Length: 419
Image (cartoon, rainbow, N blue to C red):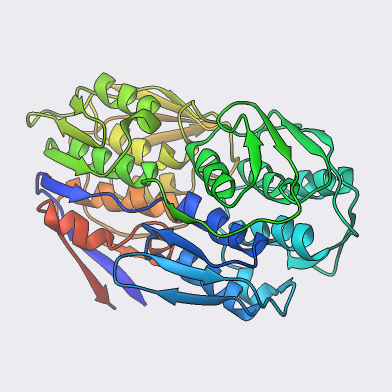
């Protein structure tokens, strides 16, 4: 099994290019099921979750071809299967995103209850209730969601809590429904907007994406489109935190500063000097130790839960005391035990981590428990004295494209090993 071996102490410096967003690529690939016409998707990140999604589509009869410019052509004109089996979806929760498109286009779908990171409850009831409100017959039995309909009908759906995948699934389903669907308390994430833009390119009638109310007027069919996926804001944020922790200076190209405002605010509070342009971010710590910051996660445009573990690592060696309150997932502090093995002084009080910064972290063998926790442990390893060995990096490979190569370009001593 692959591991990452990191020798700490190097100050990150240089320039890298940010990849396409995983959390946009997965719903967009699922959305290709809505059309019988060929669709081109560009800036697709080379990640394990993307590969799993493509394998899932191919198992249904979808034709997928690749070129050498991070673009793929998807042709769902001859879909044979309307089923997403457990064997293919057990590693990622985003697999449920094929439910809405399959049901909307074919009137039937059978999708295994999804897996993914063990970071807390992510119930599918909001997806099920939304589809039922649109007239579908939906049952959950034997680990599968089974749904049938003659044709979905528009409905007014109010989400009890903000749900990104729920918003995406029902927005896709509504594109082919009869009449208008209104989604209230909808997720506002940039990835939701990117999916909406993709669907609009296929001929969908959608307004309000990026606000808490999305309106979708159903059409008879969707066509082809050529879409470029937006940059990955979490990948960008992760490398920015790495620079802040090591006192470094880096530039990120092909990124979107407007999608990272909450993160950039906290980095400035930590002492970073930050410059931005239309598609770049520069951070300079001038060799300084970061200052601890207080964070409370919340749905976009608030501070993203997917950046919580990285800032936990930052606070572990920052000057002062910082608190991190997690409001999205109840089990998302599993990385704290591993950081403690490296000398971090962090105490968990309910859903809050109280971090008292130490002068230095020390290398230790650590184990990744989920995708973003693995990123936090890698960042901790960059600063620790000695060699840190990060196990279970299949988690990091789900969401970061060639992380060791990109960190290596910035001067980190990091390599992939088998032990």
